[in-house]
Structures are given as C-alpha cells and as structure tokens.
Amino acid sequence: MDRLETRELAYFQAVADELHFGRAAARMGIAQPALSKAIRQLERRLGVTLFERTSRAVALTEAGRVLAREARVALDAVSAAALRTQRAGTGDPRLVLAMKPGGDAGLFPAVLAAYEREPDVLPLEVVFDADSARLLREGHADAALLYSPPDELRGLDAETLLTEAAVAVLPAAHPLAGRTSLQMADLAGETLHRKPAEPRTMTSISELMHLIALGRKVAVLPRLLTTPLRDDLTTVPMADVQPISLLLAWPAHSTSPSVAALARAAAAAAHPARTSWQPG
Amino acid sequence: MDRLETRELAYFQAVADELHFGRAAARMGIAQPALSKAIRQLERRLGVTLFERTSRAVALTEAGRVLAREARVALDAVSAAALRTQRAGTGDPRLVLAMKPGGDAGLFPAVLAAYEREPDVLPLEVVFDADSARLLREGHADAALLYSPPDELRGLDAETLLTEAAVAVLPAAHPLAGRTSLQMADLAGETLHRKPAEPRTMTSISELMHLIALGRKVAVLPRLLTTPLRDDLTTVPMADVQPISLLLAWPAHSTSPSVAALARAAAAAAHPARTSWQPG
DNA sequence: CCGATCCATTCCTGCAGATTATCGATCAGG
DNA sequence: CCTGATCGATAATCTGCAGGAATGGATCGG
Image (cartoon, rainbow over all chains, first blue to last red; front, top):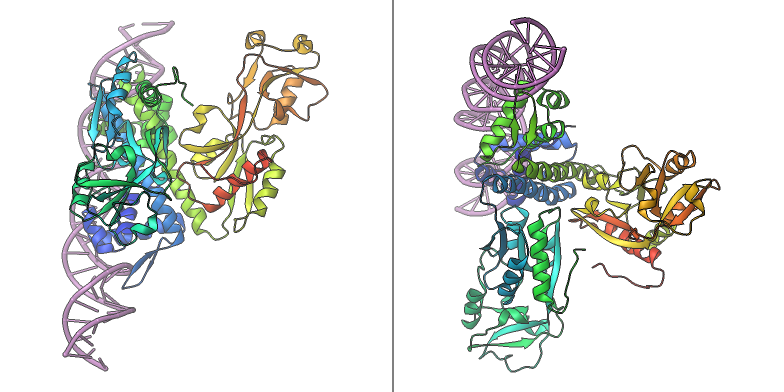
C-alpha cells in the first residue's frame, strides 16, 4: 500500500471533526460527493472502516478514533516541516518563543537576560497566543512557555521551570472568599475555568481576571499566575488539586543550538541555585 | 500557501538522500524530468531554495537541511498513522513490542510475567528487529526495548529500566584482555562496534559476539548484554564511557492503556523494590 | 574537441480528483 | 400515512496536473 497523502488526511480530519459530510466538504472547499468518494477510497486503501454512516448520522469507528489522533499528529508535523523550512530559508533567522499573555509567571525578564548572555544565539522573538502548544507543534514557534496539562505535551520535550500550588481565584465578595482552603467539590456550582479549557476564547490572564471580577466565572490557577491580583479579587488555596508546573517546551526532535541555549537560560532563571546545567 | 503533499516530501527526501536527481528518480519509480519539476515546484511553493545545483553536483542549502530533518519526522508520522489505524481496525488487537535479538538484558521474562498480571491488557507480540526505534516511529510497533543513544529518542517517551556500566568485549586472546580497565583511546586501532553504529548490518548480539571471537571487531556494550559470555571472549570495564541505559520507549502521543500497563510492568520488573508505580 | 554526465525545458497524454445532477434512506410533522 | 427535509451514495462528465519521452545546455575528463 502506498503512502497516504496529506489531502486525504485533512479530508478525514474534517469529517472526523464535523461528523457531517456536507459541512466537512464546505470546510475543505469541495463538493460533498468528492469528499464521500475520497473517504471511501481512504477506507479501501487502509482496508478499514473509519465511519459508521446512516442517512441520519455519522460516527467514528474505533479505527477512526485512532486515525483521528494520528492524523492530527501527522498533519501538524507536515505543516511544521513547511513552516520551519520557510523560516530557515527566508533570511533573518530568529528564535520564536510562544507564550500566553501574562503566562510567564513573571519569569520572562530573567529568562531573556540569561538567554542573551549565551554565546552565538539567534535574536529572540516572543509571540503571544492563547494556544502556545499548537504554535509549537505547527512550527510557528521554536519553543513555548506553558503550564502542564499532560495532554498538551505529546510529542514535545520540556523542562520544568517551577511548580506552584493551585489556588482558586474568586471575586472578593464571593461567599467562599473567606475560606482558608477549598476543595474542587466546593466549586461544583460555579462556571469553572481550568486550564486548558478554552484556549480559543481565552486570550489573556487579565481578560480572565476581568470575567471573574464580573462574577461570570471562577478559576483554578497556579499561584504565581495570579500576581499581581486585582483588589476586587481574592485567592484561596485548593486542597485537592495537584500543583501545576510551568514548563519550557520545544519540539521533540529539535537540534537547534538556540533552543538548547534558551532551555539553559530558562533553567538558570528558574533555579538560580544551580550554577550549570546539562540537557537531559 | 496550501499544505505540502507527502509525495512531494518523499521526492524531496529521495533527492536529499541521493544528492542526484537521476538516482532519486529511479528510487521513486519516476523519470528524472518529473522529479526535477516536482522539486522546483516545491521550492516555488515554499518560496525557498532547497538545493544548490550545478550541472555536476547537487547540494543541500541550509533550508534544505532543515526540511530533510522535518520531512523524515513528518513522513514517519504519516506512515505511523496508516499502520496504527490498520492495526486498530483489523480485529485481533495486539500490543507489539520491538527489541533487538538478545537486547533485553535478560529482563524480558520478568517484564512479560508482570505484564500478564495487569488487568485488561492486549496479548503481547514481540518483534525482533535491529532498528527498534524505527519500527516504533513508523507505527509497526507500540513499544520498544532499546539502549539509549539520545538521538534515537526524538519524538518518543521512555522509561529508564536500568543503567549499566560499559565494558569492552574482546577475544580472550586479545593483547588488552588482561587489563583491569580500558579507555576509549586504548581501542583506537580496533574496528570498533558501538551502538548504534550499524543498525542495518548487525541483527543480533550473538552475531556480533561471533564477529568479535573471529577478531574482526571489538565492541563496547552495557555489561548485562554480554552475559552469558562465550568462553573465547572476555570483558574489560571502560573507564571513560558513560553508563548505558536500557529503556522502554513508546510514541510520545500514545494513549493506549496497554502501553501504560507494559510500562508499569517493565518498571516493576526492573525495580523490584518499588511496589507501585505511577506514570510520570 | 569530443563524448559523457547531469539537470532543465518542452510538449504531450492519461488519470486522479473535481464538478453537477440525481437517487435512496431516514425521520419529523400534520 | 403521506410529504418534505436532510444527508450520504452513485452516476456521468470534465479538467488540471503529475508524469513520460525527447531534447537542450552546461560542465568536465581525456
């Protein structure tokens, strides 16, 4: 069997996302019959049924679920290949670091200073985005500062910079605001924002804080992320939530000396005690 | 710019490998002009020069070197997607573990026993291959036992099972056989086999041992791999070689419960002291 | 200077991958 | 029960482009 084409994978992914051939076709900018035929051909070539179709509904099979996960990885790798190649070829080489606005826990200035002391490194450019891990996987960025939901780390290498206790962020006037500690069960009735819940809609920490002040949400975050805190908010430690880690992540197959330098710099900034550091 | 197709990446990879359009075209089973045109189009689409061509030689540019690395990752991910999907869809689900013949350091029976005590796991199938990491990356295997040359681990997650001192394996009659320890410099004149030097040609440990006994090579290996030792060979500790680790590796984005169970079983077999183990 | 080597260009063809039109199955509503 | 709406599959047809064959043009060895 010869190799799958990325077009087929993209078509499959669209159908797997939409579970609807018409909408998926529209998203791909083609007509529905073409998509139906492409998926049928994909199934024939793999010798596997990917969707259970009735005239009313489309559902993924077990094999389809496997391909949905694998296709995402593969398509990300292909886009990353193109983007990294373009960045390498289009003069002006830079190291692109992605982070969520306010998501550096105040560590960035120290990291930058340490990075700039490294010899022979590329200029550092910072890109702010709510979904840094995606930027990394698709090749828009060379490294990212992010908090550690394990499922975002698939296919990436990472260095833990610091680990912080989780606190709930509440309006100062909230009934639970006076407590000395909380459990997740206490927040059951609230609209809870918990990383990485809505990377699309939530673009910055300050925006999130604003929503909390308005009483629209409460959040559970690593403590450092909450400072400085608006005076209409308060924080309460969470007793039953694992501490959350701030990581510097980079593509698992990176060989860039500048990425290595940034990892050294970030480790040095986060652990000032260590005088030298060797990549693992 | 729309997405690169895997066909283009495969063509590029062939030219990057061969540095010769004619041979690369033959390898791809197409004519040379078609390949030239495809590469030109790829360069146009990326807006980047990938090769410096003269009428006598072809060389990669800097951007071409980046794409050569990225293309390998992307193509592996695509093949893996297809293979894993087929394995998921074609009934008879199994967990495939890859290892080099004799490369389990005698640990396999204990791992297998521990694995079979895990609840709800798939039947385990073992595939022997000299290049286990490749099987893993291309989706032929779900996990692999391998020794730790760091560059083979890109894109994989791994659990260290044991770390062993390195020893030189010499014919019993070798001039250095009586030494109590050696340095790499002592072996400078020898035909040295050191992992992962020749994964293609070297298929089993016993074959390697045979070559050493014949005086064709000497090897530097983790100590456990050398037992049981043929009586016409001897081992001498290496003073200046880092200890070598035996790892259980799996794809970085694996979510399979059986892979997790195998990781637990392998860790239990390697560290009998620990009574329970949580994946990191 | 001639022949060998090797990539690029030109021109042509076939088929993969689209399109539009239509069908058949399923379900909700009156 | 019909009827109409929804939604995927099929049929018939068209077309852009991947690929083939022939050839050109640059470079180098002898």
